[in-house]
Image 1 (tube, rainbow, N blue to C red):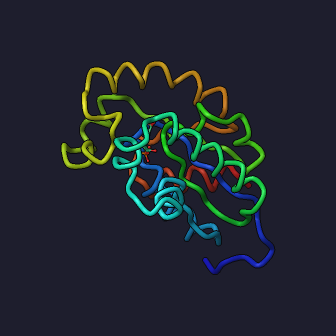
Image 2 (cartoon, helix red, strand yellow):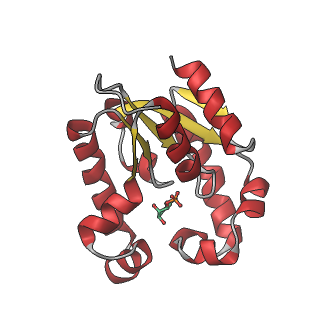
Image 3 (cartoon, rainbow, N blue to C red):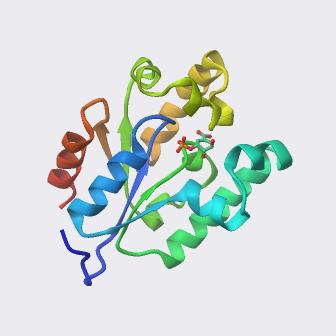
Length: 170
Ligand code: S3P
């Protein structure tokens, strides 16, 4: 679909690492006439370094502050866009609703492990150890649920997830 000049509301995708936020986000953007923005890439481009390097050189708290800052910026400046957030963004800001409609991509941890290989885990500092990632997943679930306007089953193929969101969003 062509980009809409009527500037529709943003759609904010939240969910655990490996839930498919970027894949679904790109497709959803194309199908709904919006641009796509990956909040992790936004931070990397502003910092001029990759997320694992930010974690290693500055620590997690520094990264969380950058995430909070980017959420403020998106709430103020971004329109007509599908945004995929980093898995921890809902834990650092209560303002996701000010950015747009918040959609939680819900998926079982076992399914994430089937999707995400060792190389992809290395790009994610908080996924280097599977046991602690599972514990983090359990702690985060309630937070995702509490921030979401809508929950969708993200274990389905991306096209189906997008169809479901489009059906329920309008
Ligand atoms: C994180 C998720 C990552 C990235 C960073 C921290 C988290 O994003 O922001 O490694 O705390 O869950 P993805 O969810 O896109 O992997």
